[in-house]
Image (tube, rainbow, N blue to C red):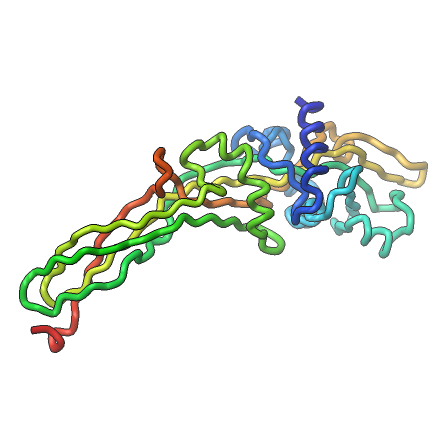
Length: 284
């Protein structure tokens, strides 16, 4: 699995190096466990085991533009401070060499599916209000319209752009959830329906969309990891020489939410009629 995973990271990183995140698309996950080696795509959670804010470290590491040789980072293993390669050259050392408490690493970033669930979206009014100011029931034809929604959010760092989110969620996830997953599958409807309006009441139509949420954890595949404790540079090929090559930080995730679609391509959800009483003084 490791050689295949490594190859997927490299291929994806080169293709998407110009996007806001260095992404490879979704890699099939292994559940929501975050024990050593039991995280998404077999990654190991370093949150709580390494110093500093590892959520923000992975976010900043993988938010860099990917070069032909990967992304680079530096961690101060005493203070927990993280620096990108440019920051390390500027603030610590002009060469890409480990120094003192600063340990250096290079590798590839990707996004692994962690979990998925269904939810109800926010109810919205999809038709104009139509009022009946008479003393008897009235019947009117309501025209309601709706267009599917897609959005994403990150748990840490700056907001994620829709284009960057689409590069993560529009690939493997589409195959995983078939018709339910609506990324880049915009759908809309316009419906006409006759409804009864009670006396001195106004009526409108609402729509509550059914949605799918997919959570991914950005993960990092270690190519090289280096340190120098005063007796020369040491280079290993796992995170801090602990034997695992793929890491993530449990608290850093990206949630993609999209309206579900029915097998016929129409939005999935519930339509309701809502009523509001009018001022009796304005009614017959």
